[in-house]
Amino acid sequence: MEVTDENLATLANYLQQTLNPDTNVRRPAEKFLESVEVNQNYAILVLHLIDKETVDLTIRVAAAIAFKNFIKRNWPI
Image (cartoon, rainbow, N blue to C red):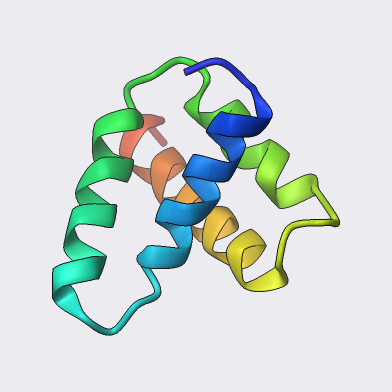
């Protein structure tokens, strides 16, 4: 996944879907995010979303939480 506006929009859309109370919407979005976590640019994409002031604050917070969870799962502490 390259850092492009299209990929940022896709990631933002899936992050928004993770906030949906309907499990039929939320679970596929969570699975998608787990599947793209292995991409070397995943963390950079998430950080770009967090930093973009034009992105809705709710999505930015969801991105920050996703980044925190990514770090917890993938970096030995």
